[in-house]
Length: 196
Image (cartoon, rainbow, N blue to C red; front, side, top):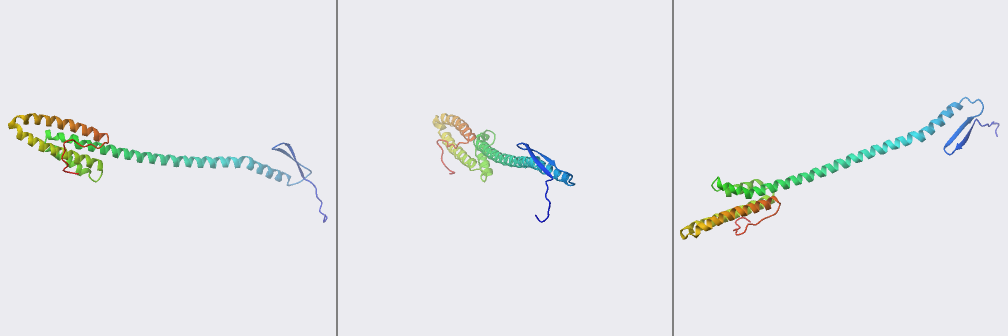
């Protein structure tokens, strides 16, 4: 048609699925170039694209793993920070009670220590504040009971009351300190609530 001569310059023979042979007919100067191009395009399609896809997937997977690890470590650190803060509050609350034994060394140490701890931690932990107030209420109530027992020494029953109050104080303070360290609220018996 229109005087153009057509002839085939190459034949493609499929030996098996996925395998083929290219046979070049005659002397065609660009046959080698075409063959190289077809081989290159097959190599690119069969090997380079899958390798690039694998490397891209591996990079995305690695980035996602790093993001998950960072988020988990941040979550763990925030949990640990909360646990440390709670543990710190429990220790200070326990000291509100055990600190009252300072009365054996310092006059009115049983009032001073919980009052100081309460004032130091009043803006940081409501748990410590509650235990500080409870300890102060109990110690002030005990001082009133000690004065009443001291007045009753003249009747001899005061000696028994003083010893009973002393033992009662030690036992109740130990119980309250243990409860505070366990993270529980505790109310002393026989306590006048001066601070609520």
